[in-house]
Length: 108
Image (cartoon, rainbow, N blue to C red; front, side, top):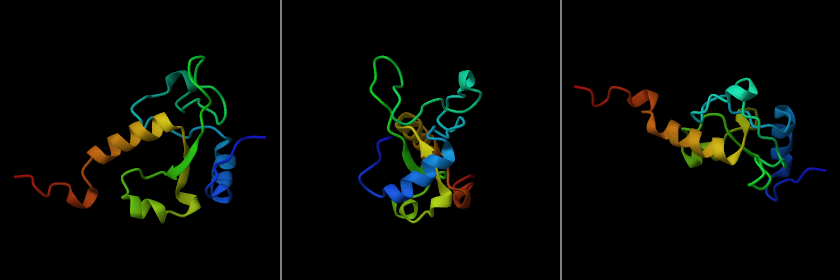
């Protein structure tokens, strides 16, 4: 039996089942995940390394540039399984990119 989050397990479970309980990052975090054929190898409740504890995957929007309010409204079809490391790095990268509707806004 795998561990589940206390909040919204009915929303979390289908996302994880669709992902095979494996992080769905394919390089958005800046890591090409070459050793794992282009997809993050981290699996839910498995140890990331011998010096780290088990990974607890989260269900978060595929579009990491969304504001927290918009992210909370994303339907389950728009969610992906993320390990915390990939999610943090990918979100940081996504937030650095200009929004599509603002691209070129201040270009001279």
